[in-house]
Image 1 (tube, one colour):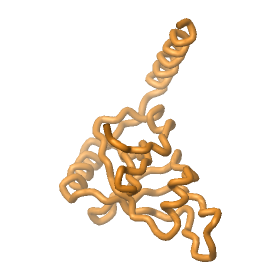
Image 2: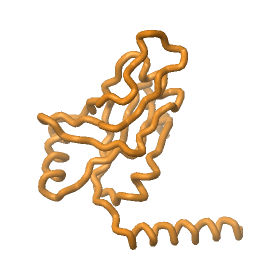
Image 3: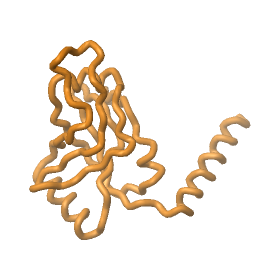
Image 4: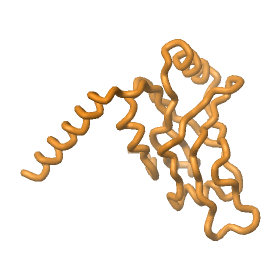
Length: 148
């Protein structure tokens, strides 16, 4: 059993995308960002990843300012670099360019050593009928749980 502490799930990502591959990446953080992450004051429902010069950046993730911070608090909506192996970056870049996959963050957690990690997934956008099917399956499973 691992000591991963999942802080935030991106529910919107699982609803809008169907993922084929998943990767775990580290985050380059500054100042009080890790304290805000541990307080779960993060919003990444509209975030996405881009590849620039063989590096992957996370855009659109908002880490709110640390409430006990001072004048040296961090910038809330800056682009954050993701830490992956070069081999993984080349695999991701190949799939994004050739197969037109999107690179979407799924989960944000703190690992057993205390580092913030993010799970990103390569996925294709779901069609409207796929989303309706997911809603129907969720309603059916909820109904079954209520009957028990």
